[in-house]
Amino acid sequence: MSAEEHGEGGDGLTRRGFLQVSGLAGAITGLSVSAARAEGQIGYFATDLPDDRLKAMLRTILRIRWHERTMADRMLGDPQYRAYNHFYAGQEAVATGVCAALRNDGPFDRIDLVYSTHRPSGHALAKGVDMKLMQAEMDFRATGLNGGYAAEMHIADPAVGFMGADGMIGPGHVIATGSAFAFRARGSDQVAVVFGGDGTYATPHFHSALNNARLLDLPFIYVLENNLYHQYAHYSYSSPHTDIADAARAYGIPARVVDGQDVFAVYNAAKEAVDRARAGGGPSFIEAKTYRYYNHWGAPGAEVGKLGAFGYDPLAITSFRPEREVRAWMQRDPVDIARRTLIDWGVLDAPAADAIEAEVKAEVAEAFAWAAEQPLCMPEDGLKHVFAEGEVLPRQIA
Image 1: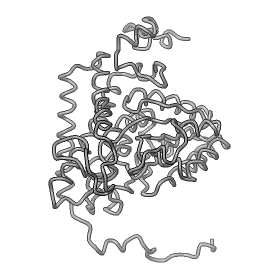
Image 2: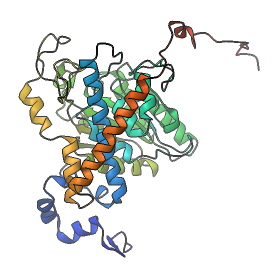
Image 3: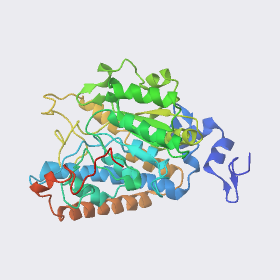
Image 4: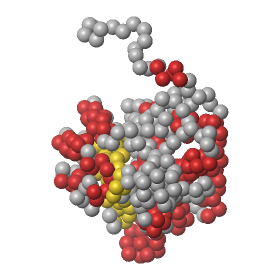
């Protein structure tokens, strides 16, 4: 190994080198909550990232969080507000950690692709989708990301490799394996990633995608965000596994269970999976244990200015989650963990972290204000892109 691989450099030890020299036990004790972990093991990938990339992860988590909170407040407090959302708050570290390990810039035939779910806003922002255009789309504006046709559950931006959300449960997994097959067929080192919830285990697409990915050794990564509930039912109702990752292992796919509240634990697992895929090692499965702070859809049970939803949900006709459970998960908040970790590592201090958050809040406010000024879609626009326009040649004739 080179000196750099050993953690030695011109400026002294890297974070990895420091942890190796200090010993694992001492490092864990000294870093408290900041130790990046994957299934109980110290992860070194995140600790070796340059400071600007580590700060970027915190910024991404904050961008997702404040976009969500702003939208929830608008839905609760403004009767004229048109948009809706399946909120991602509480799960920000998963999208951020995974997308930070991907290739997000460059021509389309070089960037990695992400397929999302009906809870897409966090994935989209982490992958690089423009917040203003996304918010305009969610507001049904004609100048939105997809011309107002997609709203929330179908947003897409191929320019950054965000191939789109899906209002159905599961089909994105099969499409993502198709992209992974195309990468392998043309000799590209691109990677296809699909996000899915715990409810996807009960769909045939889950098993079909994993089986084919393993049989064909595709550069495919399945990220299962286990937030404990699909809609209003606990995931144990549809899965016999405590860790759904066991199902992936049954197909012979390397699988990790990670703390989905810790962005650096997620990044470590994603980096390992991406490296394996690029090297021709086939698919990987990551199960991130996480939690959503709001109910399945919209903001019932929430209050303006407060994070999270508690109590009765009229859509579920019940309070389906114990309030103590919600508050217990909120004690391990992805924002707090990322912030404390970077302060522990000396990447930034509290005032610098506060400044990043202030900048993010201003960016979010500007995005919402810009979207509100955009023209609404017209009713007749619904007839566009339904039928082919102009001359259409028979497909069987060259």
